[in-house]
Image 1 (cartoon, rainbow, N blue to C red):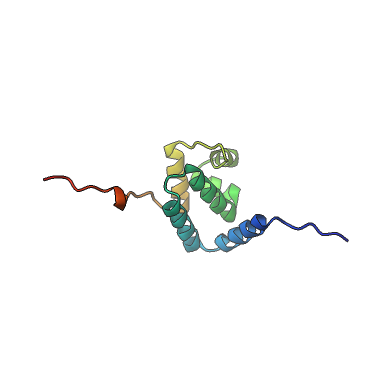
Image 2 (cartoon, rainbow, N blue to C red; image 1 turned 135 degrees about the horizontal axis):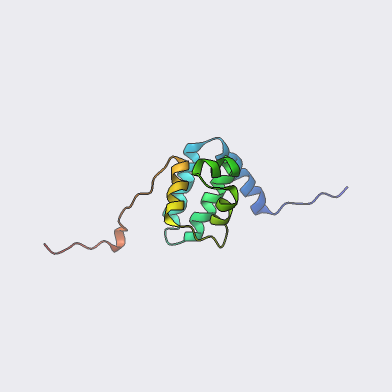
Length: 112
């Protein structure tokens, strides 16, 4: 009997989703780290949010965000380009909010 080997990234992704499934604090840390490491990559944000949505159960998460499953799936797809109000709905469903902080290396002091 031959068994198929899963690609290593699949095993990692499956274990990540399992780890995130029952731990909202872990979801928070995962999202925070992804945003900090990839602050210039909208794609990374979408992948991270999609992973968390899968961990929470895609249909249930979509309902929590006030979106259809199809709409959420499209939004978080590789070619997704969500509207700002959709991002706010998703963060609201996560029980989180967006905040802003300065980029330290680009912050300049103003002459007073």
